[in-house]
Length: 364
Image (cartoon, rainbow, N blue to C red):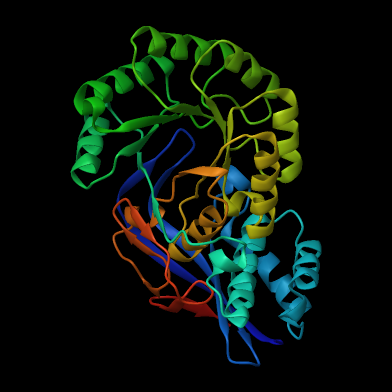
């Protein structure tokens, strides 16, 4: 299966409402789409979203990297997928967004050639459905309560609450949301690196004193502060989930060695694609550490691929946070994984099962 051409394009998708975290405010999803064609007629799709505040990659840097790898792998035979992946990663090392987009397209093709859904190609069995939570954007207590109640009305039972602006205000937000939703939803908290060690310990102590049940706190401290994360972990019963602290397999090893987390959030755009995501999940399986499959603000191609990965490792990836397509005002992908409220359904078709992507502005 020889690669004959690779195209790149952009898709701008408005959000239903502003997406706000401690790191950024976003009004629309900016998706970079990859289309890889082969001499056998199969077409593979990949996707990424510039997340400069997190990965350091802009649209310009992603496109520059993709054009470099385009020159290197056209003409390569995907019968040896591992060799093509190694060549691709060596060409654009340090560009996780670009690596992820290319990996998704190449894995899509390999699974199509094998006649298998991607989840099965990756070693999964019969799981075809997942349940995702949804993110509550950072705002005033009143705004966040309104978002939470709307999410419950839409059928979500797991809410990830964005925090990190000010621990005292954050506590007011959580108290208000808990009072409003009661036992109607499971609460996860995400501070996006917004606190100090002292602030995190004080906040979590206050949560525990008020007997507010939260499932976990995500990345309360700056990503490099593993000692601080371990200290917070020693002072709370609330599980610590790390996100920005783990980009790669080596990061995951360091976090586990330092006792800095109870669980790890895996994201394709963050770790550079499917192969590294699987390596992190398998490491965590050996250590009996559960994982979340998360996403950046990506489209249905990338998030769909993440759903396949999660379904391929269900014993380890026990938490699903793949809500980005449901935050969008439009759904341009036809075929592929179906996102309907909290329900994610993986199709029986080979590969990712994508038929077409509407609205892409293809570049020469």
